[in-house]
Amino acid sequence: MRRGIGTTALVAALALAATACGGGGDEEPQQNGSGELSGTVTFWDTSNDAEKGVYQKIAEDFEKEHPGVDVRYVNIGFDDAQNKFKNAANAGEAPEVMRTEVAWVADFASLQLIEPLGDVVEDQDDYLPQAWGSTQYEGETYALPQVTDTLALFYNKELLAEAGVEVPSSVEELKASADAIKDKGGATPLYLRGDDSYWFLPYIYGEGGDLLDAEAEKVTVDEPAGVAAFETIKDLLDSGVAETDLTDGYANQERAFNNGDVAMMVNGPWAIEGTLAGAQFKDNPDNLGVAPVLAGSQGQGAPQGGWNLSVYAGAEPENMAAAKAFAAYMSSAEVQQRTTEELSLLPTRSSVYEEPSVKDDQMVQFFKPAVDKAVQRAWIPQAASLFDPLNQELAKVIKDAATPEKAAETTAEQYRDLLEGWK
Image 1 (cartoon, one colour):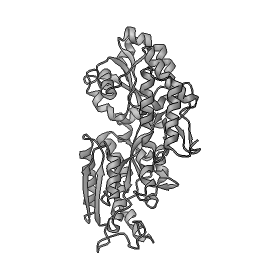
Image 2: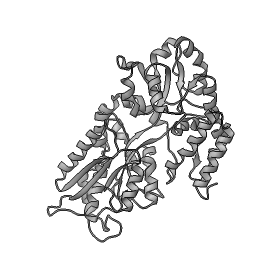
Image 3: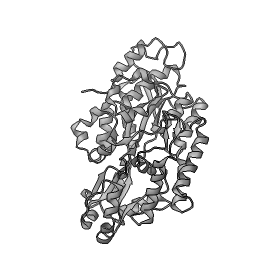
């Protein structure tokens, strides 16, 4: 079975490198007199409160394995972390390693803020293709995959059973079962996020489209699939099959689903713990079901999310080898297996999914079918900027302030302003 690259092997490989690891100098990677790895690695970890304790222990275990390395763990909130890293890097004060959201990699790489990591990859084929794609920019590897996620359909088994319907696999099946769910189950069939356009993506994927065609440098949100996605959302809301809220959609969605006011919602693996604590599930966790997102007229797919490890390009030469070794360690099969066992996070390596402890994990059982259908987003520097224009137009459609056609057209115009030279 393929395993993660060992840090000992990595140190040896880096020590033999003919060029320096850190941006053009002639220095060799720093080791102490015994040949062991040494240096300082500040690690900015963007994990949440439920996860950070485990990641800190994992970082400390690397330090125990390499006593010459001083690992300085810092938990940094996800909000504005992208800009905080850019500001710190521009000031020459960035951490050696950062847990980087998948959409940030191309942004950082385009600004030459993170180091190419192709020299530390020995087992590329072990990574899931979607996860690996998020590490690439202009033909080079700028990050190592850590965990992956996607969106899926959460459903209340008891409410669907009361209604006498199966879990729908498509929008059309949802609409066909809506009356029974409302009349017999006493719940609105679906909570639809209208305040965050990340949740719009399964609808456009389901119509066979996407926001962009990055390879062709073409904006596609205004093509028929994009219009159809807006139309689907509008139809579900107007017909009463779904409900939404534009003020605090995430909290309202969780409250409605946990209380049994809606039978289904679309959410990610980060929501499992909170959902199982809800009134409908805390005494009966088996009442929660998770399935791939609803298919549209042309297919089925949800956006790929997740986290990678990036290394600061401006790291001091005496720290660069340790930083690369630490990133490889955090991305290794052993560490990914540990984080699944302790945090139920989804691995990015195929080999880890074959481990019995991972196969038996409830989160993996819930989300692996959805991960298999995850769609790679456009890995471009402006990826994180695509959602604000779409958010604005989605809200207009929901409030009858714009037609689906106009919303798609306006979103496309803003994208073309953002992406100079794109068709």
